[in-house]
Length: 425
Image 1: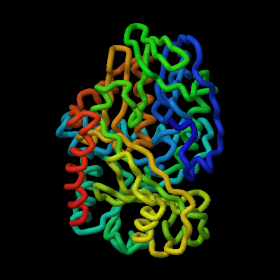
Image 2: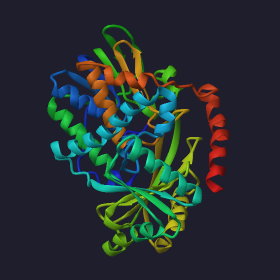
Image 3: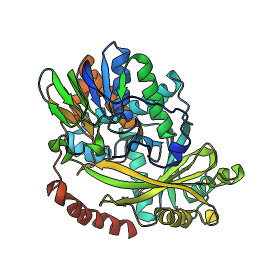
Image 4: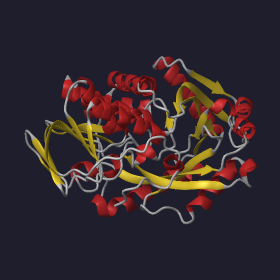
């Protein structure tokens, strides 16, 4: 198990080098949080600010997982779109879930300001269509969110307007959201961790939880220590690693990948993506891209269901990037990396209680920068005051992936092959 951040642009440009000890000996806390990504760190911050004693256990380094590796887009909604959520929980609760997702964006922006987190936040995100079917889907999506959900920050772009903002001829339409945006995810995560530490939360790295003895209080075991806690928050997402099989079976860890070019001329980055916006297409297996604060193109895409990165990842990502932006054909790629996201069968988030005093949030399905922070906030609410809002998520039905840990990957590959073929049509 690695104790270093993956070799990524984010790790190379992080502005805090936080180090925490291993857990040794026996400890007691009001709350023990497992996982130090955005979910766990936000929960710890919220609870420490309210006077709870909090211990956070991290198997590797703080921010080691998806929170420190992702594409960095913070966007509205959930990976499961509103019509899907309406079918799962009904119109009223689907609206509540939508409102929570918009609050998640506000929470992210507020945290950046409140805790003075240097993470290069930029406003603006556009969802891009590549064919007539996409154009219709984007228009329907826009109309639903505007008319039925009252979301007022969307703007439809035709092909000409897309090309004024994105220097590629691949796209036929766009739905721009001025409320969404993008950031440096590792610096944001480390900023939340640092704020939680300042509020009194204790963090321990290289302290993987090997067993939980459920009870009131619960006891969590690591190789060299224990934590006795009245409440437990599981914020492991794609990295449950056998700790709780009933939760692990509800999600599939899927590899996704990003590359970062060398720094480009500022004039070129402004031409590639006007006004520093971010973008993604609306294929099921999508590409997403943005320019960093130091004028690199960050381009993400591809998926792997095997846990093995594509052969020659740098070249694979370069090929996809140059297909969209031929202008970058001779540009050097400085970094290429990957990480796991946790997807659910229905792509809806999987939040709930494992025991009366054990809360979990997972299955963000690649839609986590803002949503993970909100998950941490909601679990903190459960501990401190009420589970009313968190309970809405418990109404979402979730199926286990067939075949358990051994055979769920082939089953998913068969299912995803259908969507990949559909993307090509």
